Length: 232
Image 1 (cartoon, rainbow, N blue to C red):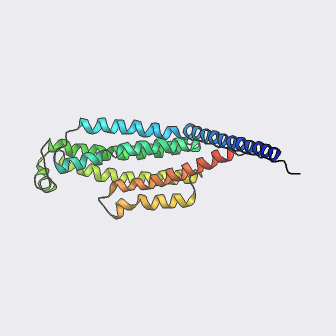
Image 2 (cartoon, helix red, strand yellow):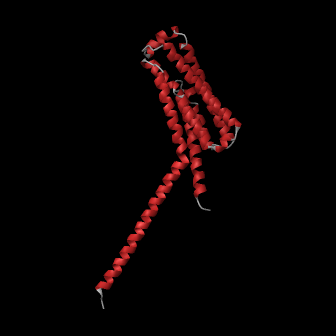
Image 3 (cartoon, rainbow, N blue to C red):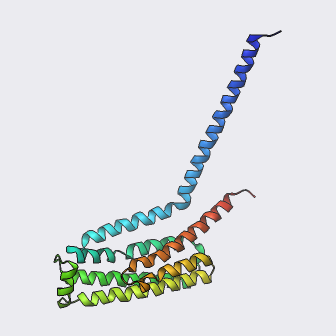
């Protein structure tokens, strides 16, 4: 005999249980997302700290230099290359604990930093030689040589750029020799680092090689973290 009341009660209980199950699954998913978010922040927050610190220093640096006119402002922008270099090196040594254990990596990294410090210094010498005048590139070409430090500043930029490329290649070689970076990314990084020598005037593009190194090291670090979090 059919009992509508009983069936209705059973259906209601089933629906209630299904609703609770869905709510439990939703809470579990939300909890997992929260754990994943906290884990991501905990594992990668130093990159944000490095970046914010370097950007703050770069803003203070740029605001403390008087660079009127296109030629001076271009050199000020080029002088700022030291800040991304500092950021990239910090990330590399943080992401690769193995690099911190090898003196050769520290020496090669210091050489990269020193080379781009020379680049920054050369650009600043040009700015100081201009002395606040609003020169275009044409005016700088016609009048700059008469100013002390103008030509030597440009020479320093060229020397620093060449030394920077060599230092980056050495850095890549050291990291590869200790198997800190993989072969493919090392080759790509070296090729990109040679661009300023192939096409003069694009010095900052030498940093693309370092970016490739960072990408490889961060991928490797993410893989290690995933393996450590996976139950055996």
